[in-house]
Image (cartoon, rainbow, N blue to C red; front, side):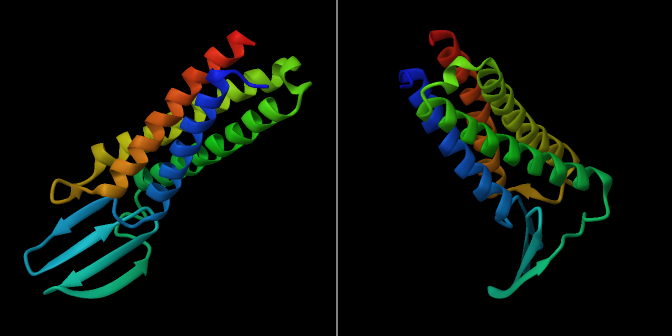
Length: 165
């Protein structure tokens, strides 16, 4: 059975993963307010509104051909996968009695939590640094950033769990 650290790691990693998914999937990383119209930019879609009328969302963004944007997408995908695999490793560690005797599971749990949170954090930092000044960061960006920080925090908690077992 997992200790208090293991349970805390599970909760933090689960919440961080959910926030990462929401931030990853929603088209509100940045907002462009052009007076009569607004545009919301996500990693995968752009949504437009003119004179208060919603014009819907289109697949793709203005920055799809930019290398930095491809990097942001790639790091976000890797970060998300790292957090999901870490969550699976944590479940195996907590639920399978012999699993906590295998160092590879312990090491993988810690490493993947840090990789997941770190890659997601790197994607948010690159996005914010490369975004043109006309845009403002929006709520999806904040949610993805919070998910990345929780992923890193889960890595710290998983170290505490492994050391206590």
